[in-house]
Structures are given as C-alpha cells and as structure tokens.
Image (cartoon, rainbow, N blue to C red; front, side, top):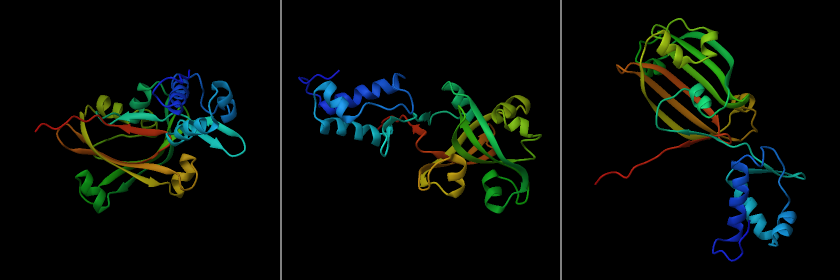
Length: 243
C-alpha cells in the first residue's frame, strides 16, 4: 500500500491507508492497531515516518493512545450538517444509529425574564423544562435542557418526550415547525457534563443554544446542549457570495 516512487509523502500514504481501514469498518472502534515497529518492518520505512502518520491520526481523532498499552481506533464522530432543521432522533436514525434518551428531570417552571423574552411569552408563564442525556447506540452524545411554553406545546408526558418531540408537535398538535437560529461555541466540560457525558474533567464540549420557530414565527422551543466534541462534529457547506 506504500509507493515509495510516488511524490506523495510516505507518512501521508500510510495515514490515508489506515484512515481508509477505519472508515470502511475493517479496523473497529477500540481495536488495537499494529505498533510503530510492526508498520516500519512491514513497509520497510522508518519508525519516524510511521510516528508522524500515527500522530496525525491521533490529532484528527481517528486514533487514541493508552499509556503502556498502545494505539487504538477511536469511535468516529457523528456528523451533522448545519443545513436543515431536524431533531436529534431524526439525525441519529438517518445515520443508522439507535437514538434514545435518559431523562434527568421533567417539570413545569415559571419563565424567568430572559427565558420569557427568548420564547416570546410573559414572565412567569408556565414552561416545560426537560433535562436529559441524548444517546446514540447507548453512548452518551449530549446533555440537553429543553424549554417549551406549556400553553403552546400542550399535553407533554414522559412517554412523549422519550420518543420524538418534533413528531408529536407536528402530527398530534398539528403545528408546523419552520426554522431555527443556532449558536455554537467551544467550551470545557463542567462537573455536571463530566458526570452525565462520561468524559474526563477538562474534556472539550460543543455548547449549542437553539431557538426554534413555527411557520407563523412563534418561538416554541429553546434548547441548550453540551455535545461531546470527541463524538460529534458539524459540517456547513458554503457558497461564494455573489459580487
């Protein structure tokens, strides 16, 4: 798999070959890969060249190292395109993963001023507050807090929110979901996120705040989420602006 006559650097050839094995499921998550010495002997290349390829794959999230044990295949990140408004359940099903949730709390609270302003309601109006861990194939992906006006999104139960909230809103309440605004920023996992997302203290997370609107412009949802940065990534396609 290594062409020493190619103008492409040997470390990059090895890097792309290992990446190909991972992306095509030949190397499985948490599977140990050969050592630097084994790669060097197999392809008759220097260990420094192998080390550069493996370092790049570790930095890109394809591999991870365990001291004294070796280098292993990392679980691949779930990719979400920023075009189109979909629910977490829809995103995971589209990728062939099984979505689920672990409910932390579900209650009705009075809207404090800032929350009321974002949802376009009066202060102290009743609002559903739903805190849950979102999972894909039983692996924690995000810690999520959702707020919905109780007078608009009526009749919520634990059974409903453990399925698909968007499906209930559109099919049972006959409300048309239209669009959302979303803010994304990088942060470090706080104590609660460390606990529920099963990450180490200081691990990177993606903080996302989304306000969703019905077709008539009425805000119906505010969601604050912390996603595991090692399991989730966002992709946005951009077009060059016309001059």
